[in-house]
Image 1: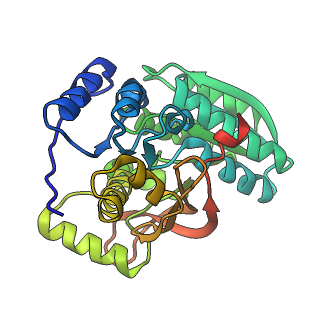
Image 2: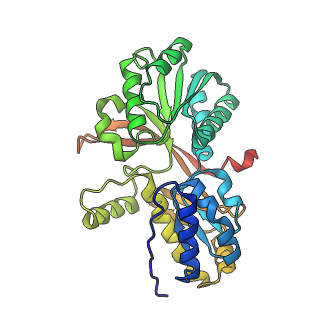
Image 3: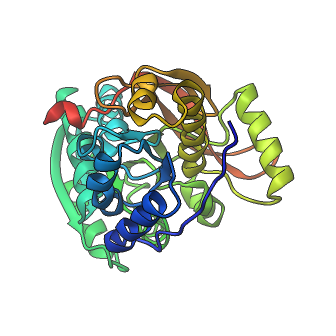
Length: 327
C-alpha cells in the first residue's frame, strides 16, 4: 500500500475548526484514516462525522476516558488520566503515607486526575485531608501552599497543565518549605521533558506515575532516540511522541490487515499487541484504548550526561483505562 500523510493543524482547543478540517479531509481528500487530536473537545466534535463515514480515527493524545465511547471508530494510543493516577494513588498508599492533599487545576482533566488518585489512594487505606482546585490562570501558588502546609499531609498529589503553571507550582512548593517539612510530592506529567531541565535541582526527587520516559531502558527506545536525533537534532522526546509513534504504527497495521475498509480495520485492531518505545502495549478489545504499563519514575540527574531525567524504578503492568470501569 502506498500511504500519503496529509497534515492539518487544529490550532489549539477549537472544536469548530477540528470538525471543519475533518469534514474537508473526509469529503474533499477522501482519507481512509485519521490520526491526531491533542484536545478532548476537538476529538468529541468529530465523533458524528467519523461514525457516519466509518473512518478509523486514532487519538494520539486527548486523554478523557469518554472519547472512545462516542464513536465505534475511535481508537486511542495515548493514555487517560485515570489510567495513570489510580495506580499511582494505590502505590503511594502502600508506601505508608496515609494522609494526602490533592491539588489540581480546576478543569476536566484535573477533575479526572483527582478522582483517579483519590480512588486508588483511599482503596489502599489512605485518607485525603483536602482537595484543592486551583484556577487555570493561577500564577501565585503561595496561598495554596500555606493551606497544604496547615494540613500537614504525608503526601501531596498535584496535577496541572505542563508549562509555566507547573514551573511556578514546583518553585512555590520548595520556597514555602513543604519539602523540608517532609511532604512528598507526586504527579504525572508535571516533570515533562519539555520543561524538565529549566526546573533544575528543585525537581530532583519528585515521583511521578506515567507511561513513557525517553530514559526508558529498551533497545527499541534507544534506536528510536538515535534515529530521532539524526532527523531532528536537539529535539526533546516526551510523552507525546509515544502516542504518535504507536498511533502511526496502529494505522499502518490496520491498513495492512484491511486496506481501506473501516469496519474490518477496527475489528483487526481489537486485541492487537506490539512492542512500543514505552514497552508492551495492546489495544483493549472492549473500549479500543491502549493497555500499557504505568511506570513509577523519580527525577534524578543522569551520571553520564548531567541532565535531569525521569528514571523508572518500578512498573505496574498492563493497566487498562480505569476511568471507563468506574462509569
